[in-house]
Length: 279
Image 1 (tube, one colour):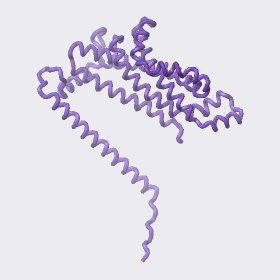
Image 2: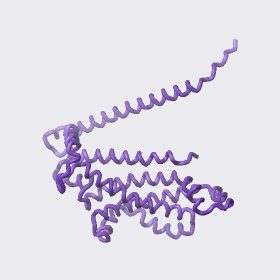
Image 3: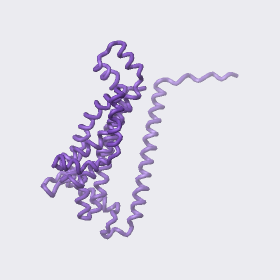
Image 4: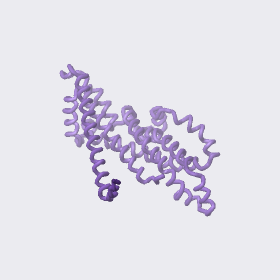
């Protein structure tokens, strides 16, 4: 006897199955995260056994207690010495935002220009390739010599750390645009501004977003090192001050806060991928 094919699933049934699959995926992810966290804390505890009496190695319990203390006094503001972690974090974020923003304003238009004009790109590429590998911190003495200002130097270092990443990703994004689109725009006698805004920028947006995301992560990494030298306030200054006082648990807390903020910044820029055109 021939089997009668089952009736095709309804759209509602398909949506319910997809919803169950997403829920199951979230549960698995959460469970794996808890297991990994427990394993990390267990290994940390084993490595620091015997240091509960005020030794240099920070223990999980002591670091947790210090985290509560730091967060409890986060908004303390009695400058110059008694400043809560919130104001250190705010100072670092302001420097990163300014340096990163200036780099994006310079690098994106320049990248579009170099990507669309091969002769200019070929002429400037040697300069870019020579300067690109230089460590951002190597620019710190140059910034201090030119600007004579610690705050401006920190922003300058962030600018140099972000500039090349955004620039090269923008140029690469332009190179991936199909010439057919630009040829069609020329055939239709579109103005250069229209070609740039309506064809080039949307098509290059995935590369630009990738550059912004990588540059922001690098900027956040570099600012901590720069502030250890030039900052009078910031996460780098906080870490250096706590090290001089041999408060290792405070440094663990700072590392945690720096990492969490870096994760949030990365996820924020990653949301721009939703604006990119689908291939």
